[in-house]
Image (tube, rainbow, N blue to C red):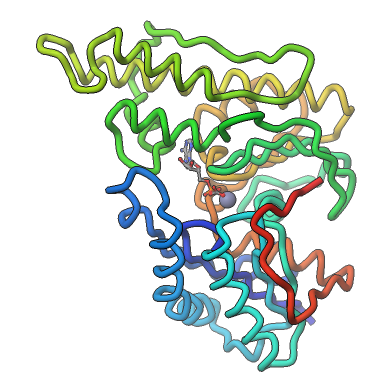
Amino acid sequence: MAIKILGIETSCDDTAAGVVEDGSKLLSNVISSQSQLHAIHGGVVPEVASRQHVRDLVPVLERATANAGLGLEEMDAIAVTYGPGLAGSLITGVNAAKAIAYSLGIPLIGVNHLEGHIYASWLAQSNLEDDPGFPLACLVASGGHTDLLLMEGHGKYKLVGRSRDDAAGEAFDKAARILGLGFPGGPEIQRVSEGATGEEKLPRAWMKDTLDFSFSGLKTALLHMAQDRGIYPSPQEGVDQERLIRELAAAFQESVVDVISSKLVDMAAKYKVKGLVLGGGVTANTRLREEIIRRSPLPVIVPPPILCTDNGAMIAACGYFQYQRGEESAIDIDVDPGLPLG
Ligand code: KG4
Ligand code: ZN
């Protein structure tokens, strides 16, 4: 019998639920994004996010089960993100999952959000045709993390590199704000960078002899360059604002892409892995995906962009592997905003 798992994700500003069969077959994936709501503030406002999850979660759950053509009572287990993330946001999803699991008498499975991003690569929509086997080098690059994880088997991780300051996604969001672009910043930077000539260059923080990253200096370098070129804090007369925004956005994107792809490929060689796995919102970035694939001699497993950003299907996929190992959570499981992986 096929195992059907409902995955719930409310760790940040997306209210999401998805149904996955046997850890890889996506039956539904419903995402209600709050980005419009937070855009006027230029970033996620935690209190606004948690209130909106309360409004959106039930309709999202109804659509996720309806799109899968299944009733809640047909689920074998409920998987839910219990950390890391914003406490008030996580609580909404965890409480809903507890109520459903308890009332149906089925297992509740608490999932680490970062591990969920990795398991998006196990969904059939990703390009994993031939399983390269373990170990794998995983990059999780999101709004809160830039982690390099050695995955030695299902559920077995070692954190071997991370950002010491801003996460890559956070840096993209801050860079977009400097350039007067919208929120979230990553997709905006990618969009305006198209057609850039590459005439502007920003530095790279290589952080020698470590797989750790640093992105806050790059953001400051961008700020200084934007001031110097006369587009920040407001455009000066006579400057070609459109061209400068395009070139500075592209310079920023190239710096991030260069450092991340270089360290990930180095890590893969150092730990003699069999393949690379990408996950998290920043890995939706076209240039980052292209560059990692171009530089890596090993297979690169990457989900389609919609499964890189936060979604419930990845939580269901991850939950399936925990279910198979009998890793059920207690019904009184609490949220863990700082939950580590590896
Ligand atoms: O994984 P995610 O959806 O949520 C968190 O777990 O944080 O990642 C969101 C982050 C945001 O910072 C957003 O700007 C970034 O991912 N992002 C991108 C792109 N799409 C989303 N960054 C660069 N290029 C993109 N295309
Ligand atoms: Zn995420």
